Every structure is written in structure tokens, then in C-alpha cells.
Length: 150
Image 1: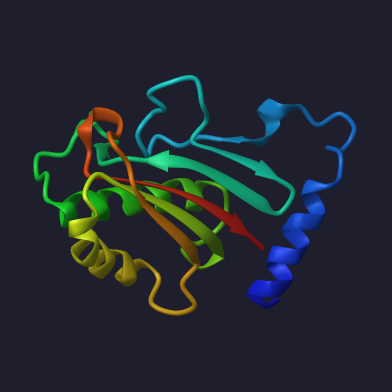
Image 2: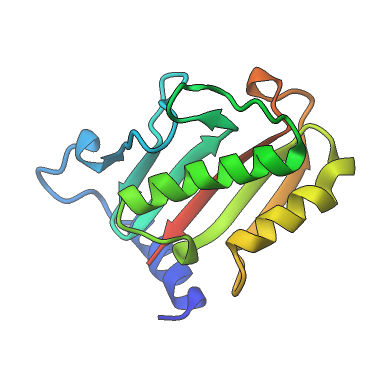
């Protein structure tokens, strides 16, 4: 199925009501291979063939603490590894990601973030929006949220 067909299918699924007997908690995706949520939200929610991933920051999943190396490259790598863990826990792959939103503390570091990001999406990268935020949780340099669809 092409990326366009997956996006169309995903948008059509959003218009459908949940199947009878399916509870919201049945769609929650959670894994210990990624950091625990640091607030009242889920790591991801699966709706049909679409997976909505909460933003990830550079927390070490083993400790739920910030990684020691606070470079933009190290933070981006950890963020994408965290997203990958949640994506895989839901039975998806990084190739299924159709859209990301990247929040950065400093867009002057975009090139360095982008170099790491590109290694996670070597072919057919997802659509992406990148914005500079006034402040991010735990004063990180980057946070990335994503949507995956099959």
C-alpha cells in the first residue's frame, strides 16, 4: 500500500466510531522500552490502523531521567529510539510513520538534529513540521511526536 493510500485510509478510519465493546484502554500502547509518561497521557493510542504517538524527549527508559549527553545529536537519537520502542510495541515499524512534529528549543541546531533524524528515515521520510518552542519539558533541546499508519 502506498503512503498516500495509507494516509487516506487513516483519515477515513478517524471518521468511523469505535467498534462496539472496544474500550479506550484497549487501544493504549505502553512499553517499558520507552520512558514512562511524565503526565496524564499515554505513550501512544492505536485507533484502527493508525497509531498516535505522544511526544518523546531524551529520557533514558531505564531510569526515566535525562540522558547525560545533552548535545542535540544525542538527544535526537534518544528521542527517536524512544519513539521506535513505542512504535514497535504496537506492532508497527519506523517505515509506518507518516508524520512527525519536531519541537526544538533552538532552530539554529536544526541541521545537526536533521542529520541524525535522516538516519532513522533513510527512504520515504514522513511528512514533518518543525517549530521552535519557547520552552520544552525538562528544558530539553528536542521533542518529537509522530503518527504511524498502515
